[in-house]
Length: 326
Ligand SMILES: Cc1cc2nc3c(=O)[nH]c(=O)nc-3n(C[C@H](O)[C@H](O)[C@H](O)COP(=O)(O)OP(=O)(O)OC[C@H]3O[C@@H](n4cnc5c(N)ncnc54)[C@H](O)[C@@H]3O)c2cc1C
Ligand code: SF4
Image 1 (cartoon, helix red, strand yellow):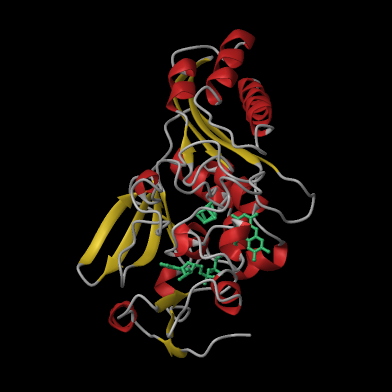
Image 2 (tube, protein in one colour; image 1 turned 45 degrees about the horizontal axis):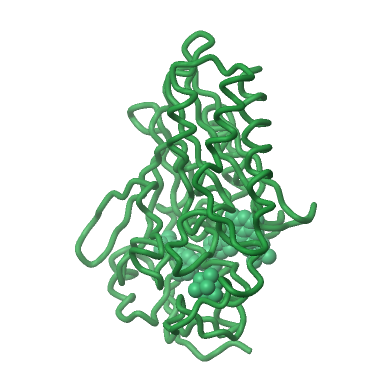
């Protein structure tokens, strides 16, 4: 059953920031994640501040330098359907298309997607774990087949649940945030927080801060991109393993590469070792094999998720091979 909370539907960003006064006041966008969390009493809320009337936060526009600005209230369906996105950032359009179900994509916004709460079943259940302010992570010694193989810091082994996030990191996006102290720009790569930094937070957002837009810089000439997700079921499901690639080619050689994993770590997980191996090279079988091995070189699997190691290697090999073909 839903707990009681008050509801404020604001007409301006200023009103929204003023309304977000306490840690138990929360931003409401499409509600597809937040309302489930409240219904299941995962965390409390005494007030919801709905930003859905803020039309300036909707839509996809060109920026002066040839990039794109995506308003935080743009739905995942709008991302998938955008010709500009499909043409210049196909890996991001693919990632949005891999998220959730058509109904959820019609309602869920990109701002809410990158801020969504983790799916760890202990966290979503009745366990007062470390991330909820308790003293213990139940997953390390428990059912951890869908958990992280990187970046756990032996504290919390959630995987970051968003599919678009790794693609946004690969495209070097920036998140614009507005709050009580004004506006700040956060590189997407630094937007999510590792357990070592703060085990109770998923993002760098402070009290009262709202994501207003995500800015994608113009991709370098010759950039190809993709997002591949492996999941347990063919219908909606979160990533067991995913790979987002944004690779700029000059001739038949890689000039620049961004390689980011999903389903791997508490944040979208950039694998710089792979980026270094492919940069300056042709994507031939030998380079691809080295890159696939490097993908999982530093993995630290848990008792039930070692299957992710061959899975990530195989997906990386498949994606780089496909990219080499153009
Ligand atoms: C059954 C199911 C399956 C799913 N599968 C996938 C999947 O496979 N891949 C995937 O990527 N996602 C998946 N999702 C998540 C889904 O994509 C998100 O729920 C959705 O994108 C969130 O958007 P929303 O607008 O509904 O956010 P809300 O539910 O309104 O908000 C989500 C969170 O973000 C905060 N928030 C929202 N907007 C802002 C903002 N502008 N600034 C600051 N904070 C904000 C809220 O306070 C809340 O904590 C799934 C969800 C469900 C319910
Ligand atoms: S993995 Fe994180 S969210 Fe899950 S039980 Fe452990 S501390 Fe809680």
